Image (tube, rainbow, N blue to C red; front, side, top):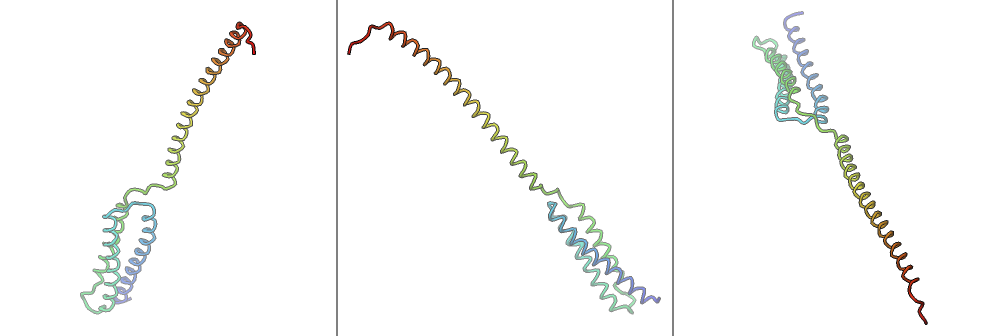
Length: 161
């Protein structure tokens, strides 16, 4: 294999790696957007990393067109691909905090509401018990008054109609 064929094979391999990294990034991005709160540094590193990978593919294509020139673009292609990979790897560490789980948030809300309803129910039960106690006391007083009234009626002389 001559130097020309070797350069061509290397360029194709680097281009394939760059395209594979872009595809993997898109798949990873779907996960990251769904599960994480992404900050400015993440988007910046991701954007520059993808741009460098695209540049690597473009430089490889131009390098193939200039295979016979001694100052070919293959070195720049490899460096752009490596820099893009490094930036994509760094962007993973700048993901940001996990998004709150909606189901857990809803469950917390329902639990809070249930606690409020439970407290209100206990307060109402206490009020009902107090009202029942007062009714029982009033009933006992009414019974005592009826008994006393009955005794008073017995002591009174009979009325004539």
